[in-house]
Image (cartoon, rainbow, N blue to C red; front, side, top):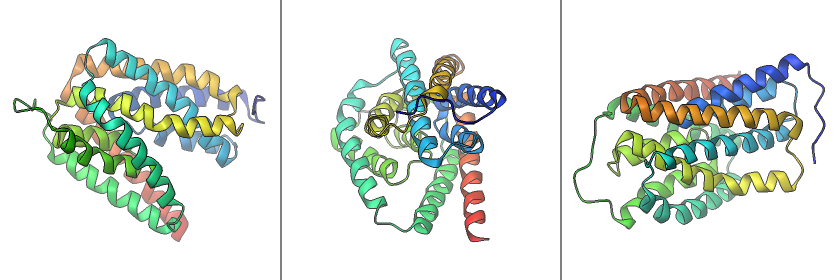
Length: 258
């Protein structure tokens, strides 16, 4: 178990804590907090496996904090969570198996293609209230959310963003309800990965604990802001996170190819 603080200046720890606070805030509203946390953790000098493990542990608690806040606000559509949880978990497992057989360059191209598609969808989807018709059937819920679970296991960046967009555009949930309902599902799909990293002793707890506290606070504040400020604010944050995700993926591809 990684208990000791790695060889880094205290200034870096402060940067990591502030990054975790911002990541928790944005992730609670639009998903994609890892795009902030992972690069900062890598720049701090930690090994990649410790970065992934620590980021997962931190993000899990931030997601849990946001999920609790949305639950207390009565925003979660539990029927969708009950129907989608197990299929998404199974799809994420299959996605992780598929990722092991896929070349890295193809993985990166798939990620970029999905992110660009999500960005276009976010630009086209209106943040107005939707609904009024019959609730989606179980089959419709599973068919629309299982592919996102597959993507989460296959690669993962922007999974929370995709879940929000699919629930809003395809399952006809209001933007706030779509965001709130995403958190319990995302929490469940991440539990397995976190447990595996903890079991393997890869989480650097001396860094993770202060980041967890900051990320959980950010998640609480972000979910509170989403509830108070509504659909237009959520949509604007979705666009910000998608642009950041696309930019980070393009940067990574450029460094790999050139």
